[in-house]
Amino acid sequence: MGFPDRAEFIIVGAGIHGLSAAWRLAERLIDRGEEVEGRIIVLDKSGIASGASGIACGVVRNNYFQPAMRNLMAHSVGVWESDPEAFSYHPVGYMQISCEAMRNDVAQIYSEQQAIGYESVFIEGEQASTHYMRGIFDDWQAKGVTSVLHEKRGGYANNTTSIYGLAKKAEALGVRIMSGVEVKGFVTEDTSAAVAAVDTNRGMIACDHVIVGAGPWVRDFWNMLDLPKQIAVKDLDGTVHDNVDMWRFWQLEEGVLQVDPGMLLTNDGKMPPVIHVDTDAPLYSDEDKSLITDEMWGIYYKPDWHFGGIQGGAAPYKVETPVDDVAIDPYGPSSPEFVSSHEFAHMWVSALAHCQSRFEGKMPKYHREPSGGIGCFTPDSFPVFDRVRDNVTIIADSNHGYKMLGVGRLVADEVMGDEQELLKPFRFDRFEKGELHPTSSSPFPWS
Ligand SMILES: Cc1cc2nc3c(=O)[nH]c(=O)nc-3n(C[C@H](O)[C@H](O)[C@H](O)COP(=O)(O)OP(=O)(O)OC[C@H]3O[C@@H](n4cnc5c(N)ncnc54)[C@H](O)[C@@H]3O)c2cc1C
Image: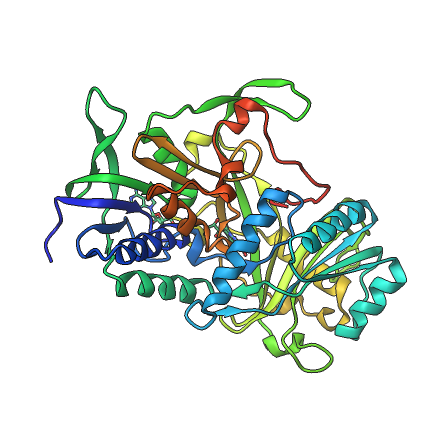
């Protein structure tokens, strides 16, 4: 097959969002009794799963303080559940285990989950929380936990396997996925804001519609489309903040403890839910008992046979480099600059031991290979899903997105002319209008 000179739909990025959109567009054409062949092309400068989707921890949860995020996640969890095998999805559930400072926020999440029929259990009080956790892990010992939200749906999926599963679904319907094709810019007619063609390292491809699902590279596409680097943001109090950077990067700190993943099975020998703990209990080193922090900290972890151990992470840190100078490539573990730090390993393994005695003394088992990667965040740390030119839609998930398997599908429905209620709270003009999402007391910018 030669290099195409035209395609009706061009999707940039063979990650979770681009492929999800391609899959749905193909379904829509087929539903109309039309041919797909040659009409939908996914372009990726590297290949399938070579961006954030291919290194994600893979956690799928509903636990969000923002109602719009929760509704969207419930939709995506439904898509994960539609074909667990193809998506390499493990529906083991998810637990948000919190200290007192977060109890009210999490109680609200629980009551709103009940309102939308998302199955979960909420335990309150220190003794009741410890009792509940010891019913799952008999060595549970985290201090100061006063609530446990146990989501019965959700869990995690294996990053690259699921993205390949998604690519297979799209290709089976006639989508063409092209690796090694780098988008360099967009060609527009003088008189129109519509993009007429996509300029690539291998030549020009004319098109009718463009969907950009470029993960952390969204900054570059924003610039290519001449969108504003700085914007005015009206906060929830009505105060307008001028000249706020549209994008900022955070480093996601993740790693693996190279032990038998089976060491984290539950008391009755089952796969445990994904564990997420946020607490202000002082955290001491598991190596020398020195104080690591007496401020709020958070970790998450799960047994993972794909990563070969106990895999998880901690709260990310802000990249201080000016946004246009951040080197996104080489990405992820290949980056010379943005990989998980030694401090992370010390903190995370100590935190595991703080929670469960089975992790005490396990620091030497920490896998020292580079891991983690950067994510590109919006001013309020929530996604932008919007049409930014007459025929260009951007899926900028603000690093929430591996779990959002359904978002590309919803975007594809919008491109086909059906506006989606679930996407409306994520339009770009919310910053100007002051329609921001509420924020919680969590130490993570994504909760
Ligand atoms: C370490 C880490 C752990 C994470 N863990 C989780 C998690 O557990 N759960 C969760 O929900 N989210 C998680 N995330 C966030 C999640 O991975 C991302 O939000 C999501 O994968 C982004 O998907 P995407 O399709 O937008 O982008 P990506 O998967 O990054 O795909 C973008 C693609 O665009 C391609 N591309 C870039 N520029 C060009 C160009 N000029 N021309 C052509 N192609 C181009 C890239 O090669 C890449 O393949 C994590 C992120 C990181 C970094």
